[in-house]
Length: 225
Image (cartoon, rainbow, N blue to C red; front, side, top):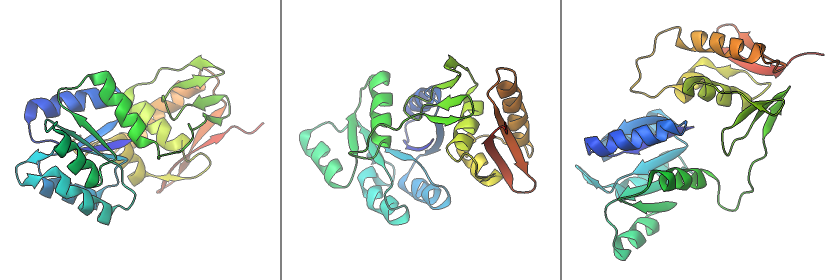
């Protein structure tokens, strides 16, 4: 899943990016309302994480602009403005959640995951393809109930494929979900990553195949009996 972090303070940006990437999220970074709005025009984000005190205004002003561009977008405010009035203003501006600084890393990740779930929705069941099982809530991956550790980008790729199992996922969509806009991405980055993931899935007997749709993308499917 991909998050747009809108934060202008360098040390806080590094801390937040580290926490979010450590939890398996792909993170794009903007330092102003203008940059965030432009990023929202170009990419689809699962969550927008906004500071309020930005160089060109109050981050709360960005919420209606995000929703105009991406109806149904999820927005969480993360700010030092901790008065009741500030919290109410942020929530009334349309934020789905409001977390104040300082914060504990564990709470941030828990609140992010809660925000990513639609209000009132049930916990999503594991997605199963062959002997492979992926839990969308915890991002835990198992083969025949045995954990399969993957590197962060391998897991991001696997998640993008398994959520659309038996459908071709375009290279553009995979690039967008696996890498952030700040990453230096080689032309064959997705091909190399797919090759590594195929090797990881073959030896434990996942009973799945990643098929190539030449010139388009890739598809995860269960092996034929």
